[in-house]
Length: 315
Ligand code: GFB
Image (cartoon, rainbow, N blue to C red):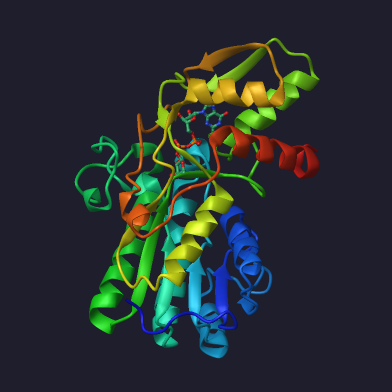
């Protein structure tokens, strides 16, 4: 357990507050009455710049840090921008985690991803399966950077008695998602493609890969809720998976998206595109035992996301 309970007026730094997870965290924290949020845009603070990050943390000295800043993207972005994914994520993590330690900040929650687990991992994937086998090649640089972050938290806790925890969310979606078809994840891509196909009265929806991989999807406000729950429960160390415990095939996902969007054409699979990991279902028992469970059903979450797409991202 960490030292003291967090107070609603304590200064909380959300790194990456303009991203999908960071913005959901800000919504969630404000809803619960946290009134002292420390936020910096990329223009105000370059997280790749070690000196700037160190002096910012020294000066502001937040009580708690959510490390939600990261270079992220879907299967194509991960596979194409491999150098940027490993470098930028390592730089952001080392700057913030080491900077937090230097500034005497004891509590931090580091966000990773379910792709840290081995490609052919036993399912559902428990936290203890980390580093028990080779990784999925399409996102290995990203996964390695996130594993480094987990190990930094663990090592700093042991050597310096910090309370740095790591959270591993499954595939997230929701407001503020990225709809660029080259770099996005599958869910926003399918929402955008199905909508455009409906508007243009196309007959087909192109889905990458075989449609057979299975994925677990969590609405981002639920993920934020889990992260705040972790903070409020004073968790002090370890890895915590965040997911729904339920999975669908990519084909099933495309069918749900088509039903929500109202596109009635047929699905065609572009098998020149990679499938990636065959399955990655998280075991969510650890957080469940601590009283947290996802609330938003997949169809309901997709309906909300489609609404956000129509209001904010269609053009
Ligand atoms: O969401 P996604 O890009 O990433 O793709 P991953 C999931 C599955 O959906 C893959 C298929 O099998 C894709 O081939 N898919 C079908 C599509 N149609 C599309 C499409 O139009 N766009 C996209 N993007 N996919 C990422 C990792 O893995 O997930 C990251 O690369 C991270 O490291 C993140 O862990 C959560 O689930 O395969």
